[in-house]
Image (cartoon, rainbow, N blue to C red):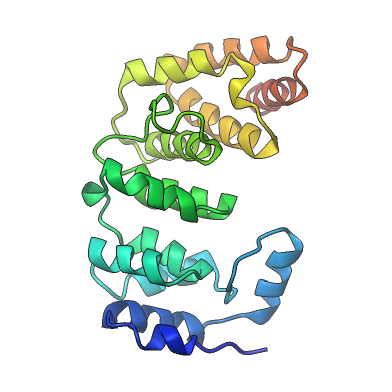
Length: 228
């Protein structure tokens, strides 16, 4: 089945956003879209365009916080939201933008893309201990993925913050479900790539496998299996 861009979106004023979305429609893949639904990726509208193709589309325009914000505000479409993270200017993201962004991060895929494309590059990383958002499950995931990507992309990250995260991950507050343990695993693997922290993370993993929490135990076992 082939989908067109909804008529109400065709009438919106931002031509760059419209051009980007027309390129998305031209690359749609209904089989991929249907397959994603089976794995729980329930978007209001999903054209089934792959991440590599979306990266190619994003490269056809200059970075623009205005266009990215417009896409987030008016296009409740998987590809529009991912593209908004790819064309945004991370240095222009402010703390005031966070609530609106958290509201649209409805899947792990979106959280990962926003972490990698935006928040791993912002002047200040999203802080796991931010009093305004620290109880927000999506915020916790975003912080963990962002820290992991920042380290893998060789961003300079404050040592004190890394130590605080390592300490926090000794508690069961962050092992809420499989999504969180996966994010934690990615984060600690990224931290452990720095020799300065490799022993700290191995000690954390050894501690986790001795706990009674199944997700904590599994996280520790997976880390040790991958690193011994």
